[in-house]
Length: 182
Length: 221
Image (cartoon, rainbow over all chains, first blue to last red; front, side, top):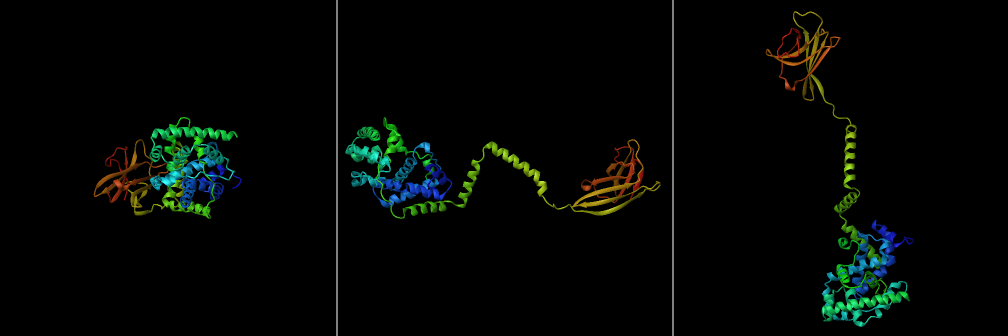
């Protein structure tokens, strides 16, 4: 199994090969858990449940992954994010909304592991954003808030939030491109 | 938890897509880059076993016998287009029709038994060695009359021999025949449409149109 690439492993998972699923866990289980850990604002139980649901989805999904779609980890984290959003919706997202502390402070990672270059890139790119921009991205991406909800939380007009988001994404892309060139 | 209907293709969630489409210049690349904005943490001990057990146990719980059948049917259906289905059905029907006679095996033979035998003797005033036999045969509840005659003279022209069934003087025709060169003649009659009878007579008729005997009697019981 270790010699197989991700696409081959996933193809085996689709025909219910347990060893292939285990190998995919060995490769990406930690990343999925870490993603869920951040999304859940460091809640261990929720992160464990989400990790279970992600691998159940891999086991039962009718979707196909091919290498032409990009890296497997990108695809897997998209699934993870969708499951996180579903989970949070079910847990009544407004519970998080009303918890000002969790909104005020969403820890940015200080990653010490260099093996995933993407992690470094996005984190460096984010560091160059303003505090407000980072907050906006965190609420949007890591809390799954809509722009309307963010406007309410920030007590600012929706137009202002949209404009800030536009600027933030533009800045983020510039920062990413600069990071890739270095 | 089954979210397959939602995740076909594992697209980004709807709110993400509509949001991004609103933003000039925003693209998938940035959104995907956001996936990696997290710190890798150590997973709790035993998580791997928990995850694998959860997946496999969920599958066992979710798969009912009916679910298995549905999966099977679905996988079979996926193998067939309307054309291949029609061709396969026609082929199966053909095979079925071909092998049915072969696989029927030792079918129950129709039971046949003689329920009555009558001798046909030469009629009074007639000369010769003509004679015959009549058998009433019960074939599994269905009655048949078989008339055998021997040494019958050859017919001439349109002449035929006609068999009459007589009940209290009432005659009904059972059929006509011509003997072969040896004078041997046979007639089989389905009795389901004929009335019962007491005696049998055979006459030589000028043609096949006789409703009642017109010719001379050759043999009788």
